[in-house]
Each structure stands twice: as structure tokens, then as C-alpha cells.
Image (cartoon, rainbow, N blue to C red; front, side, top):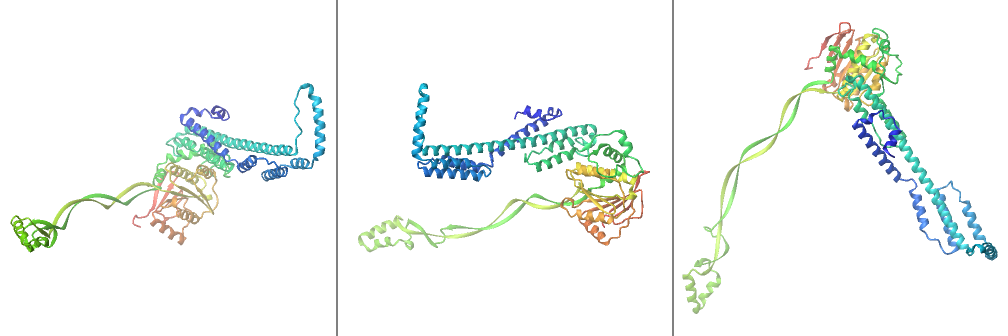
Amino acid sequence: MESEQIISQLQTHNLLDDPDIKKQFDDALQNENNQIQIALENSPFKDEDLALFERTITKTAKNIDQIATQINEDTSKFNYYNPNQKTDFIHKQLNEILAENEATDNIINIKNNIKNNIKNNTNNKTINAPKSKQENLTILRNFALNKWQEILTAKNNKWKNDTQNAMHQDFLKRMQAWFDSLKKAKELSNKNDELFGKDGLFGDLMQMAKDSLDLQHLGDLKYQKSVLEDIQNITDIDINDDDNNKQNNFILGGKGIGSGNGNQKKINIATINHYFQMIKNNKVLMDICDILGKSKQEETETYKEKITELVSYSYTQTMPTKRYKEEISGVKLGNDLENLLPQEFALLNDPDLEIFFDLKFVENRLFCFEKHGYISYAQEKWREIEKEIEKERSKEVDEQKGPIIICVDTSGSMNGQPEIVAKALTLMLAARARKEKRACFLINFSSSVDTMDLSNSKGITLLNKFLEMSFGGGTDVCIALKEGLKQMEQNNYKKSDLIAISDGGFVMNNIEIQNKIKQKRKEENKFYLLDVDGNFGVKDLFDKHWVYNSNSKSLKVLYEMKKNV
């Protein structure tokens, strides 16, 4: 399908003017075409197509009974792949042809031939001779196979059309959701760049929307639903920011923020922006945000260093010498009677040759064995060797960013300003964690707990659910800490910082949880407590215990654990 035709089926919101989006769209079109081509190659009727081909290339027999058998086999195969198709007509025709009386047939054929000759004589047309039983059976078999081919072709065409349409409709639905999310992301970025722009706390919303396009498994409705949900979660925000919403939602000291039922489907940007501005302009609370997830510690690192060493070594060198006659090494000319070859001594046994021996002796031309020995010399030398050695050194690692676990007291005593502070602080911590690609886990506790993993694609939707809820109920901090300790066992929440935000109205006397906190502290986990507008005594179980006064906007450190503890 042409690109222009597909564009006409979509509302692109003029976003194709962006070169990056246009390229991504063109790649998406190519992706769709490739998937459709691959899908159409995997016809579910391949086996039937092969069976029909095998029956078609089987030549029709000459014998009447054999042709009848072939027709029955053809229809049997056809019925195997098409159980709902009737073949009664074929069998009826087959039986009628086989039951025909040849003598009667000849008379009828002769009469018909005469009639046809008389009828067509004036038109000078040639009348075919009457068909035999064999010819009729051959015609019937060809008819049956052609009928099968028609039905198979119709099934194939319908399947191809249905498959292509399903995949294309899925493609259009995903692309439309993608364009809509791009439009919303662009509007949000323009409306509040500090939150949703390239350097915003919620990350580059436009880029996240671009990356959300997933065209895998076109035609799979279950997969499509998952993709559409992921696309929607990125920009599922209500950009309505009118003053009425602000006045109705932010009543300090009232019964909390929002309707309290937690059923709103859209995230209200007015709500987010209010909390964001409130915490952003509060230095003491921002200091807490800076502390969470940050640690300075000494680490040992291994490094390699090249060194040069002077190494001495000794060895023994053995060399041949003629000073020692230890073994035969060859033959030489000379007059060494001690090592004379036996054949030279034979010259002395013959008086005629004795004079020849004397001549050779004088001239040093007698054949003698040559002998030598060996002498060993001890040698010692020095050489430089360059090699690598591993050494360890300590280094200070600054501002390592780790996971954050936020425990928020949502009991009734938190209504009013403590609730607002708790929500604002949670928003800032979650937004920072998202921007810095850190894991963030939220635990709401009162008489029971409600947990939310804010790190996944639905994190912003879950955060909205928390911002819109009303607080109420009792206070049981133990169940929140127990849940936080459990989360620290997960790989992506090891060495995490936990902060509990409350009004301080609880007692911590669970020995088992206290022991577990001490153990987790040894595993480089940290525990903080922030009391808002309340002070019910020092909680020395935590690494640090703050008390915040919302009226004076002051922060007091009530307790801080010594570093060597």
C-alpha cells in the first residue's frame, strides 16, 4: 500500500514534518510490509496444496475401473481437507456413468448424431463423435480436480485477505495511538519543559513516546493490547490546568487532595505541577531528596602495573675439544700410529708394500681415527624482564545513586499539611529516580499496606493514583518496614535507601524487625525517618531522624547514627 494512502488513514497531527518521526514512520511502513510478506508465505493450506498437486500430476488411467478408483481417491483426499464440502454430485455422476448400457448408449448416440447432422448441416458445422464411458469418466475426474482447485484458491485468497487486513488494521491502530501520544508529549513538553522536557524530572517525554512504538506480532490482538497500554501509560496525563482545579484541589489543612476515591484515569498536570513547585522551592526538603540514594564510600579497586626487574640466571655450556680422546668422531690423514686404521697396518705384512707404508708415514698420509672429548663451562648472566603485577588501591566513590524505597504514612492523623508534604516529597523522589534510571518503590501504610513499583512503564499512572488518594485509618509502621525489608531482598533493590514519612505517632517495638534492620544496615542499606509536624520521641533505630515544621519550613535533626555503628 502506498505511503500517501496510509497517511490518509491516520491523523498524524502534522508530526511528519519532524525528520526523525518521518524516518521512524517510513521504517514502520517497511516493517509492516515485511511482516505481511512473511506471514503470507506461511499458508495454513500448504499440505492441501501439495496433496492436490500430487493428485493432479497423477495421469488418468486407461481402464474404466482404474479411473473410477482414481476419482474415489481424489474425493477422499478432498473430503479430508474439506469435511464440510459435499461430494455427492461427483459420486452420483460416477455411478450413473458406470451403470450405463453400452448398446442403449450406441443407439441413443446414433440418433442424436443424425439429428445434430440434420440440424447443423446448413451451418457446415462438424459434429463430434459420441463420447465413450472412459471419456466421460476422464471428464468427471478433471471436473472434480478443477472444482477442488477452485475451492482451495478461494480459501487461500480469503485467508490472505483476512490476514493482511488484520495486520494492517493492527498497524493502523498502533500507529494512531503512537501519533496521539507524540502529540500529547509535545503539548506537555511545551507546557512544562521542566517536568517533561529533555532535561525534565520525568525525562524526555517526547523521546519516550517515540521509543514506545512496537510493531512486533502484527495481528496478535493480545500483544496489541499490551502495546497500546504501554503507549498510553507514557502520556496518560490530563493537560487541563485551569485555576478552578488548583483552587479546588489544594486546600491546606483540609481533608487531603483530590476526590479520595482513587478512580481517576487521567493524571492531572495541575496536581503534579503544584507538588513539584512546592518541593522545588523548599530547600530543606530538597536536601533530603539529595541525601536519598547517595553514598560516599571507600572502595578497593584492582589495577595492573608494569615493572622491570633485573634477573640473574646461570647455565652450563658443553663444547667439543681435541685435548681429550674420548670417542671417535671421524677419519683424518696423519701418522698417529696409536689411532691407525687396520687396513694401514696390513701394508706392513707385504714386503713390497712396506716401503709404501713408510712413505705415507713420512708424508703424514696414513688414515687415522680422529677422536675428541667434551668440556663443560659454567656461565652466569643477567637480563631485564618487564612484567605486569596486580595491585590494590582504595578510592572514594562520590554520589553513587542507588534504589529508593519510600514508606508513606497514610493514616488519618496525616490529613492536612503532613499529607501535602508527604505527597510532594514522594513526587520529587520518584521523578528523580525515573530521570536517573534508579529503581523506586512506594509503600503506603496505615492499618494495612499498598505497594507500587514506580520504576516500570506504569509508574507515572501509579504515582497519580497515590497523589489523588485521601488518607485515613490507623498507623502500623511495622508492616511497612517489613515490606521494605522484603523488597531489599530483590536484586534491583539491594543496597537501597528507605525513608519513612510520618507524623511520628507510632511506637517501634518489634524486636524481629529491629534485628533485620541492623542486619540490612551491614549490607549497605540505609534507613531514614522524617516526622512532619509531629515529635513523639527519638527513633534511634533509623540512621537519621528528622523533624520538619511545615509552618516555619525548618528541618531539625533529632538523631543521627554514628558512622562506626
